Length: 63
Ligand SMILES: [Zn+2]
Image (cartoon, rainbow, N blue to C red):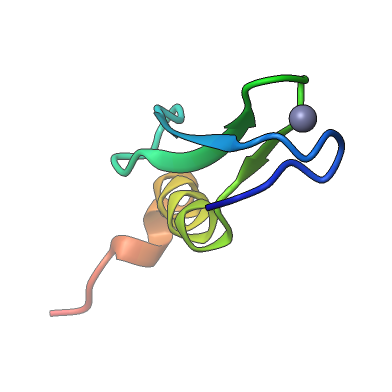
């Protein structure tokens, strides 16, 4: 269980859609204040997908 660093309340696990990424990012939102953070491993995956989409040269394969 994740605890809010601001108010020590329980953080709610929420899956969020990120533009340009297939994978939903997992975030933690405080039920009491406005604290919000992304789960590190899921944000890395989402950032990777966004980067891949932005650089089409990378997916061009040699035959
Ligand atoms: Zn809080």
